[in-house]
Amino acid sequence: MKRLSYVVMVLGLACTTTLHAQEVNSGGVESLRGTATLDETKKAETMKRVIKDKNPIARNYVHQPPMVPHQTRGYRVDLNSNKCLTCHGWKYAAETGATKVSLTHFETRDGKTLSDVSPRRYFCSQCHVTQADAKPLVDNTFEPVESLGNE
Amino acid sequence: MTKANNKKGFLQYLKSPNSAGLWFILLIGFAGGIIFWGGFNTALEVTNTEEFCISCHEMENNVYEEYRETIHYSNRSGVRATCPDCHVPKEWTHKIIRKIAASKEVWGKLTGIINTPEKFNGHRRSMAEREWKRMKENDSRECRNCHNFEYMDFSEQGNRSVKMHKDALGTGEKTCIDCHKGIAHTLPDMKGVENW
Image (cartoon, rainbow over all chains, first blue to last red):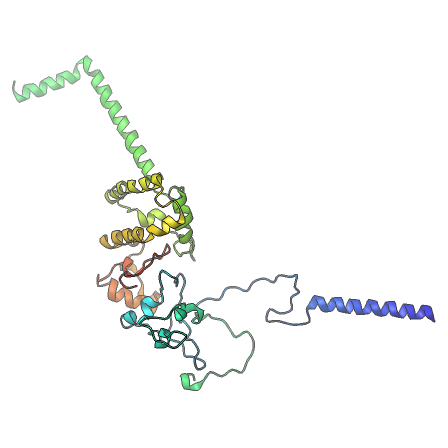
């Protein structure tokens, strides 16, 4: 009887360990990348193509930073220069036909309005990103806001 | 002595045995000329390569590194524009003028005027301005060696490109470098530069 209980205990332990090991391996969670263990590196997805040039893209929700409807390869925004503002700045927007940068970008964080783009709003690509030809990562029921010109 | 006599005398002199030396000298001069001219052009072509340009660390560690990120270094079809394609004219006369002007750059190398990144950045604006001025004055000649306005297909260009190329470039109001600054190298501080 004593021997039997030992056998049962050992078997039981062995079972839980195997189960446990399996759980560690699968991670138990399925992410957007599918099931991947920690020690495994999955092949990177192919790069998405950025659309070449398009008319402005309607916003999906209020206060959404508008998407960039053109390529921006090599456009530098740094201390020395800001390529975006050479078209989207108020001085050049009329000539180039670009959307003017919003006046909200002239405000500092404590609400003072400056005579040019505020340092906190200077780095365009922090909020405005290019639109790629990507599909939504997961199925969803999101509906863009109709009043912003979405159909 | 008359003119005819003089001519006859010269011919006779060439024909006489003791003039063999003169022929020999002429021959040496001719051969020497070919070797010198060929050598000169070969040396000129050697200094007109990317390898030669980046044999100086000033070029390799600054402008070359910046250029490697741009479309003129790496692109879809693998066609490249190397240093001399943009910075040295193709046509012989202009090339020689540019090469003579470049002796100042040799002096700069010897005196180490831009031999650290800090010194290089200190001179970046003045060096950039020199190139912008050169491009502006020759109507972006080196760009146009490859990018010919006559053969631009507007239907293949983006809306923005069509507008600017048609309105500004087509009318001759602007030249390539007026808009396309900093396409191959990092820009200096652009404060006060027109259109920036």
